[in-house]
Length: 350
Image 1 (cartoon, rainbow, N blue to C red):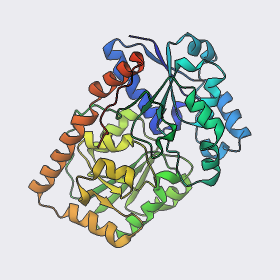
Image 2: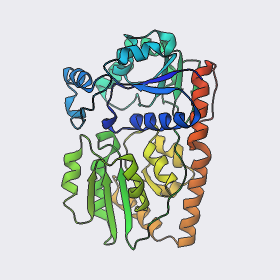
Image 3: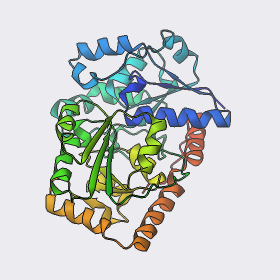
Image 4: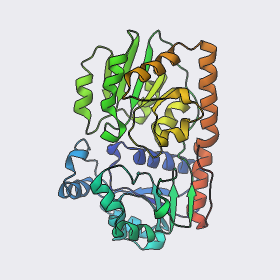
């Protein structure tokens, strides 16, 4: 198997979907004899760059974890380098290595509604950088295929579907897990608090720029904010939860959605196209977190389902996701695609 290096200027403490993807991919590779590693520049270097760009607040919570001062040599020794489609990441990498080594993964939406971002990501520099890549790998189809090369594949993210022994409770236990940033919609949890029944609890696991918003919610007696939770401890958090809340404004592939379903939870997600791609078969799991009436109705309906009907729904969702997102299948396809250099079109993960 070819040597694959994942380039990530962002420290692992960023706690986003790309960092989770890296951990899952490397974890898979260890058990399969695949040579996959990660190259990270020193955290101090990354923080200097984002500070110069006026983005320090977005990364205020990062821990200075070190990184590898020798990351340039690691990148240049790789046969293939995997990088996400962020402009900063691509510019940084393109200064170090040639075009034929680069494989771009679409982990970030281009059309987020931000005017400055639209100018950058639809400009000639970004289009040129995308054209320098050897291959494009996408975790789900981007809304604008103009950036896609002819050599592309659509391969979903993967997790282990082992299932967990659920901890019973008389409460209806709601969970928000992930980065606390505007696009993830943690501010919308205020509406969940407003419609909560007396036996509902709301657990929030994560940190990020919107932490002050969540801190204000945590004063409520039914809200429990855990802060940033390690991946190993998240398993016990999932086991003591019933529903995953996904109030996102936009998404690509939310790892937390797949992980939570793998752990036996049901999701309740914002009704946006990206999440409808995953949950469209179950419209009862889609809602509008800005509409308190619809939000309460969705949650009430799930809570009041007969136990056998609820078990059937949970099993149906679990098995459907397992068939598409099992780690061994997903990452084997990804390794083969990167190494082959062929145009292999995989199914749209719906």
